[in-house]
Amino acid sequence: MRAIVAAMSVSIATMAVAAGDKAVLVRFGNGEVLTEQDLSELLSRRVDMRQAGRNMWGVQAALRELALNRALVLEGTALGEPRNSGKESARFDDAYSLAVYKKLSPSCEPPADGAAARQFFDANPQVFSVPPMARLSRIMLPVGISLDGEPAMGWLMQQAQAVGSGGRKFDDVAERAAAVYKLDPQGDLGWVTLTDDVTILRALAAAKAGDMVGPVREGDFAYLFSVVAKRESRQLAWEDVAASAPNRMVRYCREQGSKQLQERLFAKYGVELDQAAIQGLFNRVDAKK
Image 1: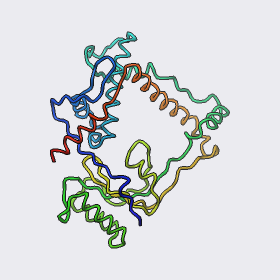
Image 2 (image 1 turned 90 degrees about the vertical axis):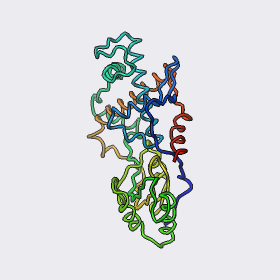
Image 3 (image 1 turned 30 degrees about the vertical axis):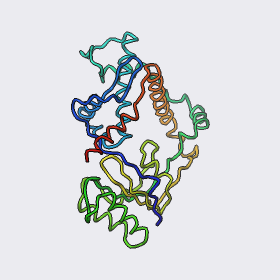
Image 4 (image 1 turned 60 degrees about the vertical axis):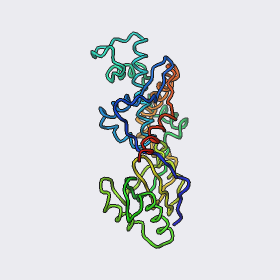
């Protein structure tokens, strides 16, 4: 088993927003800003997004959603859309921004007939492709702990070398890790879609069956992966998707509409994420350790 280590060496510290911090993370063309405090409040009220603070890509996604909320409020106000939520002066208004979003989003209708669905299939083959998947085994440890006298990253590096040389089995290492960290599954994860939206999974897309990937640090955690098996991306035939093509056409229309609306509003209101400031959140916490 060959190990892929250097390609995924990352040093991103834990996201920990202190109440009252005012670091500017997003700027608007009209002079408005979104701060560390705005992000902290979003993560506090949105249970589904609290894991976003663990890594940089999660923070970026949360900030884009927060910026879109504000841009929709600005756009609705510019269009004269009434606000009935009792939050007329609020910067962020989920109900109002959703109403404006629905008004501005394109109407996505299913194809009129089978011929129209086939025409969409022929014109958009990428919509009907299966993304790459991998059967993964994973070891995941908080970066702040030590095993056998070694910090997590150093310990995982030693284990990767031992597995690569045949001195240990990956499953044995996962079992050892499970003895000290049980909140997330260790070992076999089953088949996982290697999406482009997640940095680690995107990097795994380049690995082959039999590879180890890592150790890599992402947010609070250090990871080591074993790619047990791999299924490459493949194009589906019309006969395989004819029945589901109308629904997929509607979903694709909505996905593209949402993406284009965000791009248009961000351009109109001059929305810019400050990548250096976002990275600084992690570097600041890392320096305190």
